Image 1 (tube, rainbow, N blue to C red):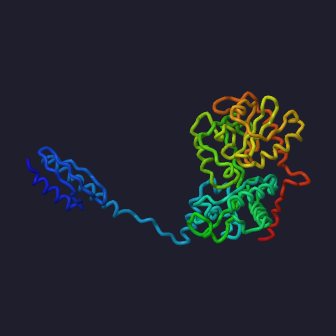
Image 2 (image 1 turned 60 degrees about the vertical axis):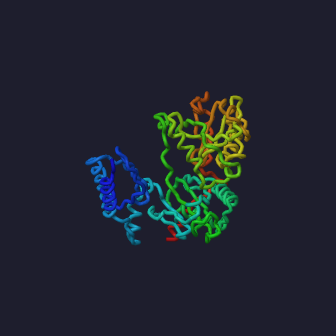
Image 3 (image 1 turned 90 degrees about the vertical axis):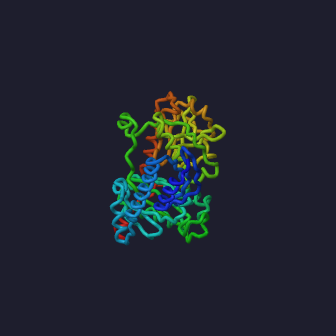
Length: 412
């Protein structure tokens, strides 16, 4: 049976909805018609009589409806400067409003306490290339704890990342001090970033006019509790798992950079596991590296406290301080400190395991890969108290930088 009539109807419908017929095959039972609309191929199966017309009419109706929808869409608004400022202020997350206290930006050339303006420019190479380094210092009772050591690490990371600071070390320290003073708080976190700078979207930093520097003071966040017991203790007992994410190379792991995707994926993996709270990196040779954003320590049955070597992880400032403090602490005199490589097998035989860092101090890890460690974290909790005591300023203030809150009042 010929399909001349059907073909004529189809071509008329094509013309009405803007289709172009590419191929048409006659058949007594059915036909396959290949047609394009806006460059997309569609396959229409022809049926006889009213069914065929119904199919084409439905197709035409849907295309017409789609076009009308596109015509009705409202364009994205173009904002005036005043509208931008207003929207920045109304779109701030509650956490930002409550906890972001003072912010320095090298672009602004000063400090703001307005959370809406605590922004980074999109063309800063730290944003779109990850070409930036950072560090974190804790503010305790009006003193910045181990600020000098954190600045040292920032500058060493910048050197390895080929970021050449525009400012002297003393100027950077003054910026950090004055931002802390502007916040007005006695306890909090001071986070700071040194970047390749602004200038465009090239891969290299040749286009950058000069490096960028940012710092912010925030409240110390409430501890994240994983059980009622954690809440009663005031801190958490963690459960770890070996992350499937591969470790960074020794060189890259020695830089405290903004390239944290591996660390983030490790955290995401742990959060999907109901038996874990954090991930632990293990290098290709089976040696323990570090956690997502913390170093780890192990107390073995024979009394050896092992801090894994920094060959394939970041040199933790708090971990180094623990190695200095433990031999001087009478309650921990039974422990001997080692800084060496340790295999997963040996580490899992430890009595105690803990995470350590500027924000975690010494936090017990009581389970690893669903195996509970036999110890009761007694030594870890002593180490934690020793660190807390060390953070409290006592003359001489070798590790403490006093914040002069009055200087900003005078400047105003």
